[in-house]
Image (cartoon, rainbow, N blue to C red):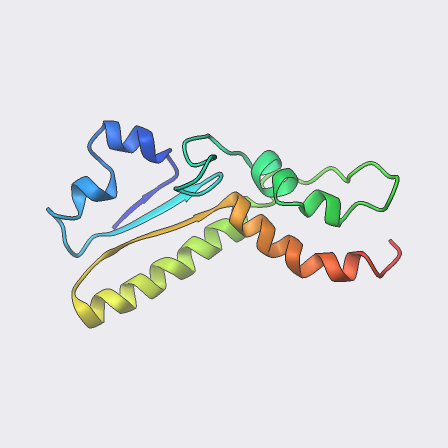
Length: 130
């Protein structure tokens, strides 16, 4: 198993990307956390908790009363649930590997987890006075 939070482009330059390693290690579970996910416009960008999880996901907006300043998040607010999301993905990959003998690429991002959290908060936050 390889668990990383390095940008995938940096790993590819080192020959440590999933595509390079999987043929040599077919049972490899490659787990990656990033700021914005492995694909798309943000895939190569570094991402941090306050930018990717808190701001770009819409979570800050969800928790900010109209006309007010957004609350200041505690450090690492998105790191914990994003790490748990990756751990859940790794557990599923382990079960699949036990069943099939094959590893796989598992990923999540701060943005993806933030959007999930914001989506569950948004309806309540817009109907309840803080």
